[in-house]
Length: 267
Ligand code: SF4
Image (cartoon, rainbow, N blue to C red; front, side, top):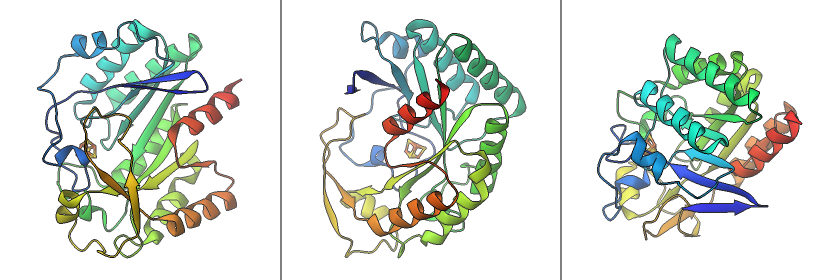
């Protein structure tokens, strides 16, 4: 599925199959979520044939950098085929060899006039197991160190605090602490609220049942007809925005304006 924003066209590319991270808030675990079988790289690349994207999000059905070398190969092949900006999102961390490959890829993209945007998802600190209970997921500390390593390699980083939860479930101080610790190696901060359905609510033990919400439209990266609700975290978002202002850190609730901001910086 594609979306347009001021004629800057976005496409999604993702491995499919059940995501081994199995985050408790993840929409891909709702019962009627349709996922394709395991995919190979050439099929995923071929799916965007003729779509002429300006940016490809390596994101959607699964953690795409579970095996970082495989995720990087997918990214490189997509760039070979479509020669456009690329946004990667991960909760994983890479070893030295994969960071070096990522860095070379970034340089190659820069030399060819394109941008790489690298999102590291860190939604919580001490409470992270409330969302990410699987022990194979790197700790927030490991992810923060990885973010700094990526930034040190000259890559634009998006510190991604998603999903942002109500303070009653995950204290907002944790998000503020993450920003404080990562402020010197985040190009921008990205954060938006959690979306839930009944299945997700059952998985999130202790989630406040009286949360205020509104119906969410279909998520752009999905073809699935699943009805989610946005949880109102406007108070928490305001606190993040205030801290980012204090640190002169650009803050966004959506990735497309963040991309446009970074692209302008590069001109
Ligand atoms: S890593 Fe991403 S796709 Fe995988 S379970 Fe977590 S939120 Fe879902």
